[in-house]
Length: 233
Image 1 (cartoon, rainbow, N blue to C red):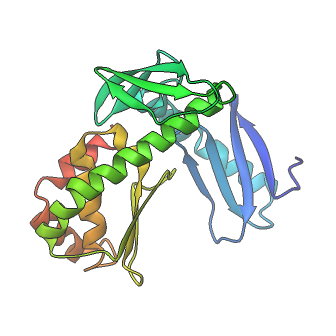
Image 2 (tube, rainbow, N blue to C red; image 1 turned 90 degrees about the vertical axis):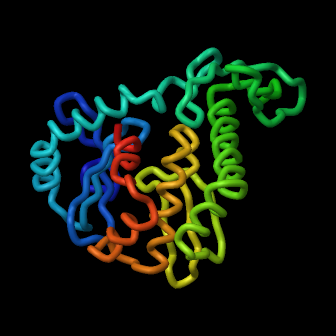
């Protein structure tokens, strides 16, 4: 698309930045877990201002891309590739399963991914692994993290959801008392899941990240700041 469109690409120092103009007040720039840089700008923002903003943040983009590239979570998703599960590496082994795919399962230090002939592609593998991550997080929530953290905090959510999110580890709709957890937490140590669950439950007491919220976290999850660092390593 052209730069006059609401969606287009910029190339800054050889790095592609996906630009989207939308209804918002200020420009935002982030690097996703896939290593792609995305810039959001208010509607009708001149191209010159968008380019200037991107150039100003060029070094920050490269630092963020370097962190993503060095993360074990970002390792190539492929047969015999490495896949981090609850903080430990497992090796992916794709198996042909005829006309029907089956759920991935662990066998020692290997994650077996049975794929049908039709789905035995990079995209099919990625979807199977995404579904596996979600199932792992759902299981851990139901069996361990939610009962443990609800008992500690005394707070109870009306509902729990799991899905892949690019920029948040969890979110809480306070009015509905529903909490959503990022399925990518299955890549990390289980303490990280406990931390995010506790964090979102504390929002049922205090919606903002003010001093009261931090006091609640200190009370219910001592050492939470050290665990939070694991998610930004």
